[in-house]
Length: 340
Image (cartoon, rainbow, N blue to C red; front, top):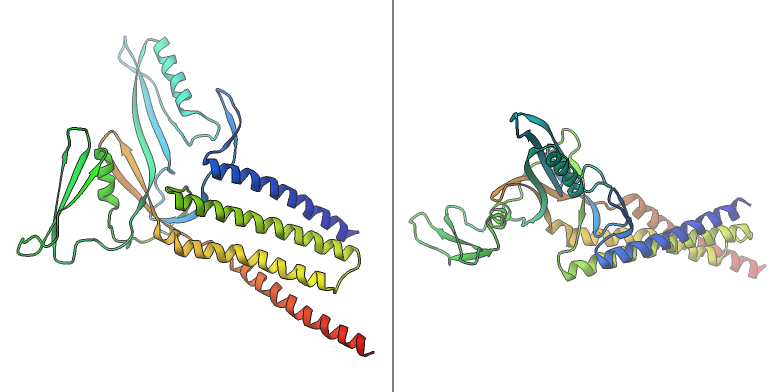
């Protein structure tokens, strides 16, 4: 009876996994959450696009990114005294709407005849390019920039040796604004030699979203394969307990089910390991604080952590080995029965 109950429990888990996988695939393809309902004061969504990953960071004193922190203060127009102050953040609550909250504060101040002052700070995530500097040891680089008539900025980089002789061609990069150019100066060809601060929590959960079509396809295929093998594992366990309920213990069908369980545990971990070393190690996120139009500060660098579960890897290998041992034992038993 217990085997039958466990079989149905895993079937229910299978149904929930299929539903969750379909929702996740819709979110990954659309690259936006599914909206259940949206109200002026709150909203409810399902799913998040991209991959949720863990990463080490260099320090722990900054607000999580992406985040918009707006500090406000109101001044009485008659007395000139500050009557209220505070701040609102895009990460203060999952159901809050920062713009609507700020609009209500501004409206209340206007009705009181007060003047409101705002100060905005934005924390965003960008990718850094790991590797050594493009300038050779002993060479001196000259960097200059200028604005173009259409509002863009051009950055010019020259490299000289000790005799002030130019040794490489002039490199020119064009940017849509000064902020983008300053962020490029922070991230381009910086050495990946920072240390990890271990006091306090030194890791953070980041959500990596695709930036091109190749990453878009890789992420969807990875999520699809993960959901597929999870569902297949639950189905296999359900069938195994169903066979136990029917008193089919040492049979060729159960041996095949053990082999499938081993593959379902092993393949997703190996796939993640390939993706980690082939893609994630080449991406180094960075956190920036932006205050005003030109003030850009590099707050943090990150390094993705390998999340390969070696317990599942060894368990998958053990099930595969066990299935072959049972298969040999079943063959010996059949040969023994025939000889008798």
